[in-house]
Every structure is written in structure tokens, then in C-alpha cells.
Image: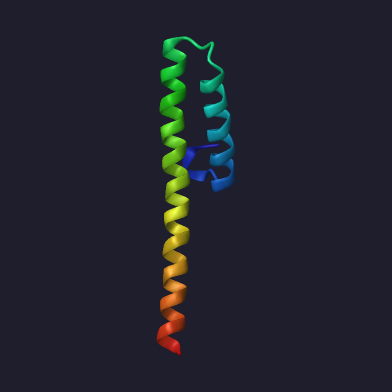
Length: 68
């Protein structure tokens, strides 16, 4: 599955797994850096979903206010 098709829930679950692996330690520096980079990408995906949801809520509120 490509990053573009990850749902919020999938990205969040994978991000939690990445964080857990980083906190546990035991990885090489290279592995840790790769995990960190993956975590950053997943965090961006999650933020994109949250921003989109915020925009939809704002649009719905404006439509309701303008229609009242």
C-alpha cells in the first residue's frame, strides 16, 4: 500500500509502532534514522488528514451560519 492511500487510522497505527520501536531501542543508528524518517512521513500523513477534517468542519459551519 502506498503512503497516498493510507487512511488516518492506518498511518496512526504504524506511527505508534515506529515510536514503540524507537523507544525500545536496540536498533542500529541506520535503522533508527530510517524509523525516524518513516515516523516523520507518517506524522505528516496524519496531520494532512486532520487538516482536511478541520477544513470540512469549518466549511460545514460556514454553510450552516450563512444558511441560517
